[in-house]
Image (cartoon, rainbow over all chains, first blue to last red; front, side, top):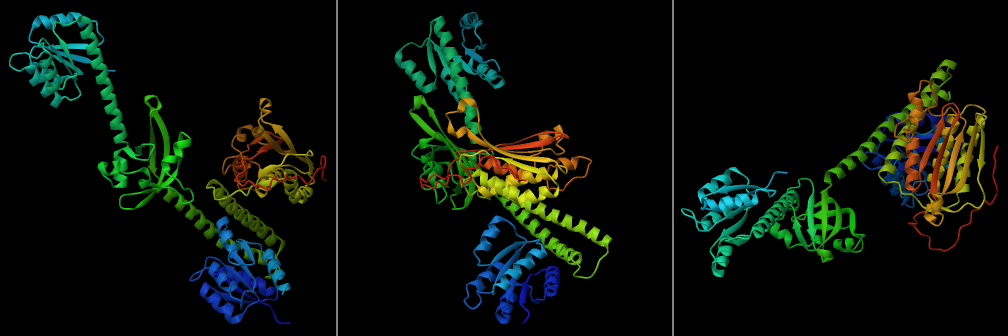
Length: 124
Length: 511
């Protein structure tokens, strides 16, 4: 079976690095994007199995990236897990309107994130 | 208060002498002058409240004197004491000299006393009026606007004119609704706010002459005079632009700080997790020990950031309470179930006593669960192994004499532990922000942010309840909060369906 491919979108190289390390150990193949524009490009070009998406991104923010993909029939089935450092209620409310499948607040527990990822990739 | 002074002017010495004899027992000071020139010199030196002058005098007659005084000392009340007897000359004198009263010679002793006293009272009233008018006009920090009940602006002070960029003349032709706009979702004329109640306060958007907007906080009240015939509305208005700006900056600062701290914390946490889980290779027991300390403190910092945001949201009312009819038994049990494993770990006996048939509470279930869970969690933290924690719910009446007032009926939820307790000097501070008793004690205890109880207090008070704490050092603590049974139903369901608690059971015990 082919390795499942996960697109990690975050402008913080350190965070991408640590997530990537953990996911690769679990047998996932990781793709990276450092801003919203690159995220959209790679999502469409590479069609990953799942996207981990930060909200505060350069160029195009995470909400917009999620909305763009989730309202496009071609890509709407790709699960999106939002990662964010913004934990105010209003941010969570906005997050809920973007069609993202999950919302996880930084700093998060890696095991928790892995459990979520497994949940979405199993149901496929 | 300064003694009031009356100046008498007459060219006849015997008139002045008899006035002196007549009035020396009166409660005001009398000064005497024999001609107009002398009178003016005295007035330049002294504060004269009332002047009483003859009209026919050599050199400067009474009319000349009075008109000079009117120009130079308009606040002095002017009286005439003269023998010029016919009606026409009296009216002429009153009109030309613009005087207050005319006393005819020969005078009646009582009349002169009464008239001078009345003149002094009038002078006092006038100066008080001038003082108040000056106070209102020059109030530097508050706009004062007086409006007619139909909305027409009747008076306003200098600050109002300057902030709205209108001249006094322009403003007096406007209506209050030209200056202030309500929020779109609250239709109606501003003056109508006070039609039903006698006062109103709130925030409005102010519109200047140039169409610029600024936020304004207004306190409006109706004041009635002349037996209720005149019911004008007085508005005190503050420009709250700066407060709003500070609030915005505070909000931005907290959001930014939170983001800037969470981002590096995420990298640290992920890295520590990777090493601790041995994904990056084996580690020694000592390495594990210290990385575990690091991990625990990362979690503590993350928890603190969450509490900080949480409290901030509560304080700024950004957190909306989702009111619903809740069964308090379910809410309390949900909280307890979450914490039961933690209690078991420390072999703490966690018991619950909830009577059947508790009334329905109108509250935000998740917030109340949060309060109960926090209190139980705290109790577990501060109670030693094999201790006891008891959670109890009971209905209560606020005061026995309020039996017939349903609004005063509460349920009381208490969490009692056999833990370390709180020293008496710290009890009154336990609900303060950033206050942590154990931080002030030498013994190192469980970590916490010191915000939890402050958050609980906000939640309980937002529901119209109260929270309190009793404790005895070394014996244990008891936290009690109340929730009103009939909460102000802001989101009335309107279904008319009575909600019955699911759990009708008697006292429940777990463990």
